[in-house]
Length: 179
Image (cartoon, rainbow, N blue to C red; front, side):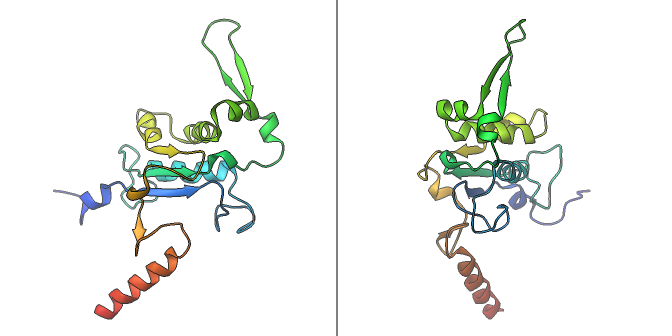
């Protein structure tokens, strides 16, 4: 007998979320509507969406996460002197091959998208699903990206853009009038 009730195929369907690393966020920012979200807060939110923990059907052994499109990675916000002091390490397992690079050098060489990808990778569980989840993260330096048609929309307005909350309220009120 099945333990699931309802439309499970719809629950397992993947949606596309858009997050801007440049604009202030009301819940992710330390100073709401003033500063953009910091790298750690942004990465933890993205990791939760990639794992699917925001869904009621979440299970640690299944991959039920969504796609995440992050724009404006060139303007990642970090606090303090992390941009110049944080170091990333890599090693080839040969003696004396430990290499270090700071965040500002890595950002100049590969851009902010690579730094965000490394931060999200560190917050995902270290298991066989990690690479599949990271492949669903699409990070871009600017605001242009090829996934605009895939984003979730309410009343023709993508979620997260100005006016989408009013569009949701209008749709819900119209549905309540039908009942």
